[in-house]
Length: 98
Picture (cartoon, rainbow, N blue to C red):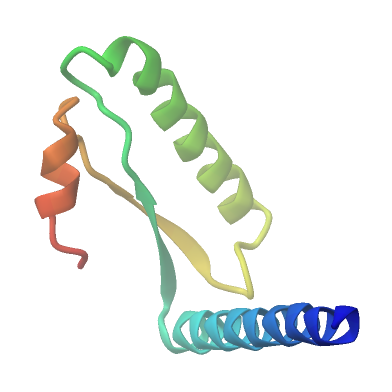
């Protein structure tokens, strides 16, 4: 019985690894096809959470700038896409991904 449980655990890990590898491959192919790689910066710049999230947005933008100065990722520049959810959590649930 322990052998079967062990095999199920191994199978689950294998399936998860395959799914993760496919996801990374898809992202890699998409990154190679585009001239830039878009990076979402989704921190509130207004509203009640702005006091703590504005600095997070600044750090993300600084990191993107530093990465671009060093040649980007896979030879592509990162393009920040800044969205201000204005501390409105349902807004991000309704926001279509583009």
